[in-house]
Image (cartoon, rainbow, N blue to C red):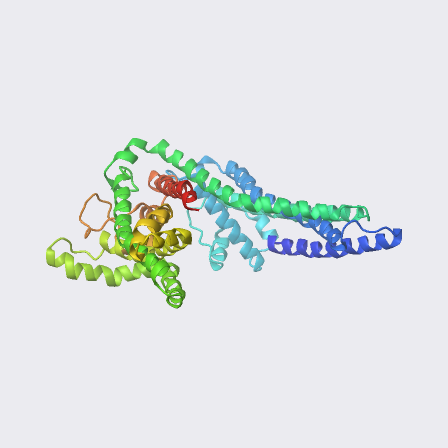
Length: 486
């Protein structure tokens, strides 16, 4: 029984428990001539909660822990002789899981009976072809120990799944029957339901915090592992980025940070002035009809997929800058450049700046405008001397949030700026950013334990710290100065 089918069964038991609990509450009230403390539906909800919540919690914990326990047990059974020279035990375990899944597919399709799988030992040449039929390629270098581990993995997994199914169903039926038995007119069923709702809301509010904590911890642990292999001082202060995947790599982050800063700066130099001018016009000069049309039209730019912007940079903007400016001036020959990616990214950021700034300008109290007009100021003078100073903290926050968005962009940089890690000032040269190298270092068939792969986590943690700092700075500026004008 798959987890999906098991979940459907538990949901069906939950619905049944609701109606049985409601029916028992009404019947007990009529029989004892005592008024119910809560509405009948609350009694049904209490039974349904005791059926579903323990069962789903047990199933979630089982699904999380079972693979870890099985892998630890099977990994201990694989002898060191079965690990290829220079390889990792994790790669062998990947083969074990792949073969075990293939045996499941073959057994489901009737290619191999359970008795045949039990009798198999080291000689499995006939099984290799049947595994290939279901899309599982098994090389000739797979040792008998690995195949035996795959069979054990499959058998233990089946037993664990059977025990899980029984435990979940027993939990649902047992807690549901207990909740059904304790129903009586004096039972405070409404309090049970409302307590559960409060706990559910509290858990929902913790999702974002726990997700951020999980991201940080996962990056931190792998980054610590990387710095045990590669010196931290070389990573942070080297001016060369040259991963070899065969040893002798130089993994300096400075060229990547410079490329990230340069591309983001070009994007912000385009997006911030245009976005602010759009926001000022829409908030102070445009009519209601034009505003209702123009603002949604501009915000459409924010909904365009970044891969579309990347294609626009690769096919249109890059060749145009190369043919019209770079080649005639002799300062570049490539369509991939910092200016290409920066200009296209700036177009993408315009709605971020304009929309946030427009909302902030509209939030400036009308009394400030009226006071300025009352002193004889014109509309332009009011905007320059009253409205913009009042909205400046929020505008700075909007710019910093747009900068965070620019720093984290990937697809536009991949297709517009190229992949060359270098330190330079020429905007018509190809450069790259941190996000691009994170993708490239984790792409391909490379050993996960190598420093060339683990460096992606160090890059990710560095980028996370930069963007988090910008977001904190933006929130600090907005909160510190906003109350002065409310």
